[in-house]
Length: 631
Image (cartoon, rainbow, N blue to C red):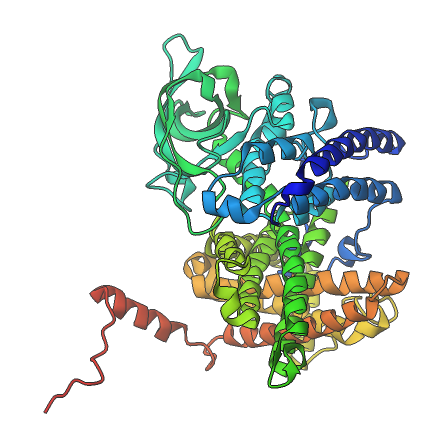
């Protein structure tokens, strides 16, 4: 967005009026909702959908019909969206933010006035109290500037989230109101020079003072988003804990640390490839005195707090990436429909059409996954959706990177120029594959969490059979016999009890086949590798990729079924996108499952590892130069 000086005064007045009107409307709309309709939900209950897929089970009642919000909530979110969209289109100068590597104070003030620093903080503490679904919807707009999106996410998706999900009532009352208004900004301090993805190896230490009333904090944290501007830090440090046996152990504890406690300094802001306007720097703690009442959760329970914080926020990357992509599709389509080459518009060339269709498809899939996950997280019985959220993050970040690259290709030389926003989108979205858990670590998390769940249940079954449970043994025998003859799979997705619209029946059948045989594959892998599966990263990567595809297929089929059933406009377009994606994904899944079979000729893992080993031993490319001679 380029600033328009003549209108600036009027725009500011309009925005202030909008903000005031908006907060009044929000309060009125809230009053119409049933009591407790949107409490922030944090507990855990039943196993969520994704883990069951590893057993070849499809819990259709979890994901069909596609989640929908009430008319009241829809009205409320639409009243929220208007002023925020207006602010981003008229008041945010993304080019300047990128060039100056700083978000101007008046822009930050505007974000604070809109309530965007307290989106998920409950109303009783001064926040907007948004559900996960509504938070995801606003994320579509805030993502239009990468630096702002990261500043807001570092503040509330991770920075203050510890207080929200594990804090005491006193901690919430003391800290949340000023964090909600944006008077205080939060940061999340976990990463250190020696511990990136391996969070358990941090060295920052908190030592209990002699009077036992406070901890003395020493150490440094790197690459901290908001590190130079934050007033409140959630800091993770090693503490000595005496266990039940009386032995002293080193365990991680989470702390709420105020800059005002003293002994906190930070390095200069990092000069980054993308998201340049967000503040990222090293933070140093030197004898910082932290009162004992500022421990978050239990002493020694910090690792769990850190994982819960990170697990709960990842899903929003899906809607944020989709929001960014939708904007990109608009700009790219406009160019393709007006630019002429060889007496034809670019939009008439098949290879350009293919790129546009790819972008539309990826945006549709990530949006479908994100809102399905948000809907699951908003259910009153609170399933553990950490695997689903991780899958959304992996798929969305990788798809965003591919699509931005394709958009640049459509624009040609123009896309490469700093005068246009495309190269900024490319630089900004590269970080998505790295932060909030690298995609490599998350793939291991997705696969191992699912397989651990399946392994436990299969072990129980084997125990029952050994005890003489004839019915279970017979069931297992019949299943194997049917599989060897190539059984007809029926998981209730299609057919007489089906939940899929007839126009998506073929995709539904593909999903059923994939889910069933994935369960068979997982069982085979657990028998083959047992506990050593943990070290088989190339195997686990395929397991994770299949799981991500299965969840993505589920999301698009469920969403498109709802759209066509209730007659949403352009529902036939959704059906097209869903069917194309499911055809591609089921093919990828079948190939990956073939590779996972023992002695599969398609599987090149051993050769791949051998190549890597030879390169790494010499730490260089080891082939002789093509111009070399031996005679």
